Image (tube, rainbow, N blue to C red; front, side):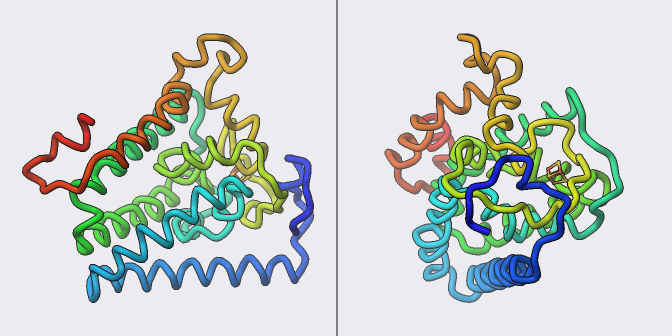
Length: 247
Ligand code: SF4
C-alpha cells in the first residue's frame, strides 16, 4: 500500500487486497468516530474540545497532505458522506460549472479561516453547526452530482489546500473509493494525478507567466500571506467582524 505508485495506478480498476480494504475501512471508521466525538464534545465540553480540535486534530491535515493528500481523502468522513448517496449515477460537472464550483470552494476557504478568529475558535456550538452544515452539504450534493464531483472535487473548502500541498506526494497510495474510476470529474481530479490536478486548476496558463491571473494561481500566491495574516491577528468578538477579514 505504501510503495510509490504511478498516477494512473492510484485509480486502477484492480480491486484492493483484503488487507488494503480492511485497513482503509478501519481508517474510515476511526475518522467517523473522531468526528462524532468532536461534534458531541463541542456541545458537552466546548473549551477542551475546541483546544484539541484546533491544536491537535486540524494541524495534522496539512501535514498529511504533504505525505499524500489521498491518505486523508481516503478516510475523510465528508468524502464518505459525499459518496453514500450514489457513486455511479448523477450529473458530471464540466467546463464553466466545474470552474464555478471550484471558485466557490476557494471563497468558502477564504470565509471560514478568518471566521475562526471571529467565532469558530471560541464558540463550540457554532463550530459544531458549521461542521454539521458541511456534512449535510456533502451528503446532499451526492444525490445530484456523481461520486465526489459535487463536493470533494469541487466545493470542498479544503480541496485548494489539498491540491497545493499534495501536488507531489512523498508516498503512493491506492485510492480506495474509486474502483473503478467513474470519471465523476471532467478534469483535474486530485486522486488521478496530483501534479496534473494543480496544472489544470491553473488552466492553460500553468506554464506561462500569466498563471497568476487564474483564481487558483492567485490563491497559491496569496496563501502564505493569508496564513501569516491569520496568525498575526487575535480572536475578536463579533462586533469587530471586519478586523480578521481586513488584516
Ligand atoms: S474522477 Fe471521480 S471517480 Fe475518478 S478517481 Fe476522481 S473522484 Fe474518483
